[in-house]
Structures are given as C-alpha cells and as structure tokens.
Image (tube, rainbow, N blue to C red; front, side, top):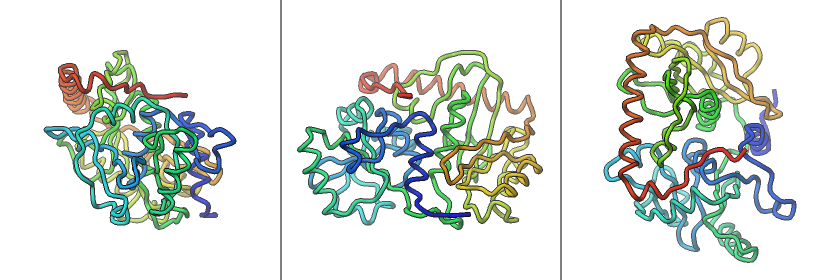
Length: 331
C-alpha cells in the first residue's frame, strides 16, 4: 500500500463528497479547490487543525470551533499574528468579536489551499490576490500533511465521517451529552430529524427541518491505519466505548485513512463500522451492527432534541446570528 502525495488524495476525497469543486484553470497555480462559505468553514473547524483565513499582512483569522460558540459569550472568530503561525496550534489567537467578518466567511465562495504557507508565501499570496481583485478573507488555508503515514491519525478522518453522517440525517458533534467520554466524535439521529448537520451549523443559526427518520446513535473513533487492529486502539477501542455506554449508543465506527481490505473485513466481522478512502480518493463506508437499547437510546435522543431546540431558541433571539447565511451544501 502506497502512502504518498496526501494533498492530491485528499483533494480527490473532497471532490468526491460533491461539496467541493475544481477552481478555474487560470487560478489552479494558486488554489486547490473552491466551495461555499459554510462548507469551507466546516472543513476548517473540523478537518484541519491548523486552518486559517487570510486577512492582511499582519494577521490571519482563525475559524470558530464548537466550544467557541457554545461558550458565553460566544467567540465568533479569533485572530493570530502571522509570525505566530509556527506555534499554532496550541495557540488559539485573540478573540475577535467581529460578526461582519464571520458573515463574510459564511456567505462568500472560498478558495482553498491544502498546504502550509510560510510568512513570505502569505505576503506573496496577498499581492497576487489583490491583483485578481479577490478579498483575502475569501482564501482559506487548510493544511494537509504532505504524506499519508500509517502511524498518523488525522482530524480529517473525523470530518469525513461527519460529512457521511450529516448526509444520512445525523447531528454530528464532539458533544457526548454526559453518556460516555473518550470517543472522538458522535452522530445522533432523532425520529424528527428531517436533515443532518454539524453542530457548528446549528450554533451559527441553522434550523433543522423536521421529518420522519429512524432513531440512531453512533460513536466514531478516528485512528491511525497501523492501529486499527491494535488490542488497545481502533476496532477494540471503539467497541469498548460502545459497550461501556450501556446501550445509549448503538453503533461504533472507526474512521481511518486508506484502511486495508483485511482490516475492513475484521471490523465487519466484529460488528464495527468503517469509514475510509483509498489511494484514488474513493470514499468507502461500511455499516456497523446496531447494539442500542431502544429505550435508553430514545432517552438520549430526547436530550439531544431538547439541546437543539434550546440552541435554535437562542439563535432566534440573537440579531447577530440571524444575519448569518448558513446555507450548507453548494453541490
């Protein structure tokens, strides 16, 4: 199995989601992809830990995470000096209470760069962007490691799982609702969810359409490819979290880059789902066995629904959030 040229593989994965598109031929020497504002923001917040938007010759803009907008007061954005990018993360940057910038981020089409930029490269990009009359805030830098290494796990695998579950009508989030700590990610689908969403979309003002759906709860463990079959990681770890949930969570998934066929077979054999992609960027999803206790799962999902309704009520009463355009999917 080859582990190389990760940027091109990830680019293919993103194109295969149907949410991202190739840029105009004349701009392909500058940017890798383009997409709508909210989809770029979700990639930045969930899929690339070192993401930022260009701003000016001194600052870049750091996108909000779930915890930023769950807090009181919510922090819409952060700003970071370009010279401090080498330390990011863990430096989060200074809070920036500029909802106009956040509105521009969510509304406008974004061009995406899937690699790290040096200080001099950022200055060069700012010059080139000005020459083509493009706003710096329309450019998202979402660095992807240049190699796919089997010993590395990636938050991109969490994001990819989130895209899949959102498409299946789930609310996807880091929040565990007090059931169990440990898993990287969760997906919840209540019987009244007519569509799916990342929690960040709800926090930015999205209202879920109501509909009829099958109740379901899942946990997702992002894992390095080498550790999928490890006794303390991967499949074993995901199933351990699942069984410790006492029936509140019904399904366990491992999300990993370029999982081998024998690893997928073992996951299916043990009742664990798998989300992965191959060297061509094809996205592969294998459904998990359902171990839920229906009564407990329903109890948990009632809490999830109440939480969503509470956030929607908050958003309705917040004039700043009302002005945001959080229409997701530009497919």
